[in-house]
Amino acid sequence: MTCKYCQKPIGLLRSLTDEEYCCNDHKSAHQTGSARTLRDLSELQPDTASSWTINGLRANNQQTGENFWSYTQTALLSLVALGGILFLAIQFSGSDYQGERPEGRFSEWLGSQLSSLLAKEKIDLPRLNFHEEFNKANLSRWTPANNGARWNVHNGLIQPGGLRIWQPTQNLADYRFQFEGSVENSSINWAVRAIDHRNYQASKVTIGSDKSRPSTDLVRFTVIAGKEMRRIRVPLPVRLKQHAFHHYEIRASGDRLMTFVDGQFVDSYVDPRLASGGVGFFSEGRERASIRWVRLSSGREFVDQLRSYFSFGLDLPFFK
Image: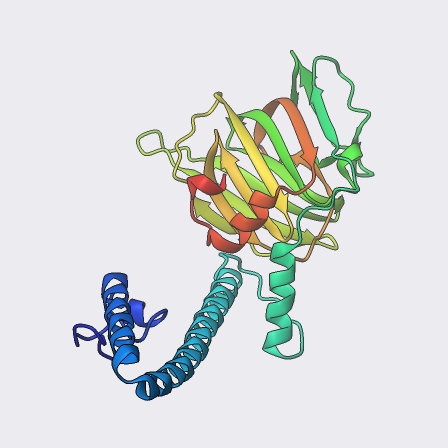
């Protein structure tokens, strides 16, 4: 395609909205010249000018149709691109879970994903906020398994043993779970989406014992019907020291779980097997940690929905 004014090729991006002129200045100049020519002809040759006017109207109508089709093509390409982003975000979300996709046509599946993206948080349910400090040896709201949990409370700190679930959070689905804790020996462990003591998502931050090259890793796994699934180890971009308190935050949003340490994003993965459940702490073997306080805010932030679709597990500041 070439410009009607200067006869130069029209750029690719320009051709999406205008297939006749390479820029707005040339379009304006050419139309002004055409109008002047038409006025001169109308003074000299009325019949010809009338015929030209009719043909010009037909050409304008044809151009309007072509522009409409060009805009339609652009809109369709945008929808296809958005669909591709959603597809990639779900396919390469960093999860080791390989669940089945819904049966049916791809268009139906894509429609459901778009609906999920655009559906904002329900406002008919009030937000719940829980906060607890451990100044007293009172663990009545922390439910242990049948065989007890062997927790210690000392100087305003708890040292978890077997898994205990924070009872007020047990029926929640989406929330921000925060606590301040210190690794006393090896690791600090927590659970989210804990339906009961046999079904939960578990994570732990471990600190290596090599003093010359200390390493910090995140280990996560899922327990279903009392059976532990494969453990995933993720090296963290932060370096933590034992006996130092740090701030931890876990966001459960839909089927995505995101982890932050001292405000820094460190891990994100998708696992739809447990859609709801509370939070808790535990330790394994000779591991020991201290927890100073814990808080939880229920509900899903819309920004977390966007982040779960478009961040691809990356640390994007404008999605925090």
